Image (cartoon, rainbow, N blue to C red):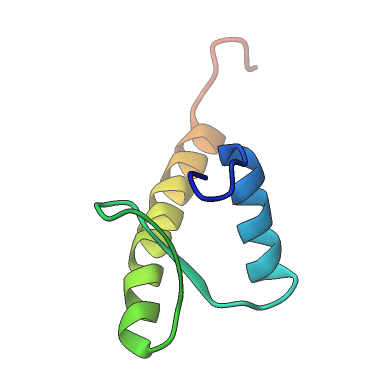
Amino acid sequence: MKLSGLKNREVRGIIYRLIVLHHVPIGSQYKRPNGYYVITNNEERQQALAPLTSQIAMMSKRAQVIGNVELENEE
C-alpha cells in the first residue's frame, strides 16, 4: 500500500485476482517485516500455507457452531 498509494482493500483485491485468476504464487507475512511476496521455493510455500490452513480450521469450527446452535425462537 505504501509503495502503490492504493487502499488496503484495493491491494487485497489485486492480490486475490493474481493468485486465483492468474495462478501467481503470492504469500503474505503478517509479522514484521510484513507484506506480500512471490513464493519461490517450498519453504516459502509452507510459510504461506500455515496461517491459511489455521484460519480455515478456525472458520470451519465457527461455522459449525453457528449452524448447530439452538436458537430461542426455533420450534
